[in-house]
Image (tube, rainbow, N blue to C red):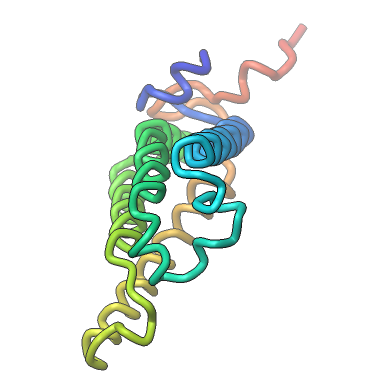
Length: 175
């Protein structure tokens, strides 16, 4: 399977090693590209490496555009994340629907958290704060499920309904 198919196709199966290698490379690439763009367009003070973006009030008032750049570059990795997660579910002989739905939900939640960032003390009345807390606990549980189901559990041995084992390419042929 080509790198293009691994990253953009929802068909077939994908090994954990390929999933992790591509995911880590994508994450590092987006981080570095974001930093270079932010340093060159907005200045070093807006870089994540500068340490100046640690407070929610600073984030909301002065750093909207740099954060938007980071979010847009991160959003560019959504399709590969969905495709690779689907193939990892297929490798476990599972439908990809649940994993795709959870990945999208966690991504949307992450972006909403950034755009609607509020200091914890300004969360509002207790019932709203408790609902916010419960929602974030659910998002954490969804993230843990994705991590375990997609990134940790081994795939089905041999062929399954989604295709041949991706490990079959590296197994020595019988004499």
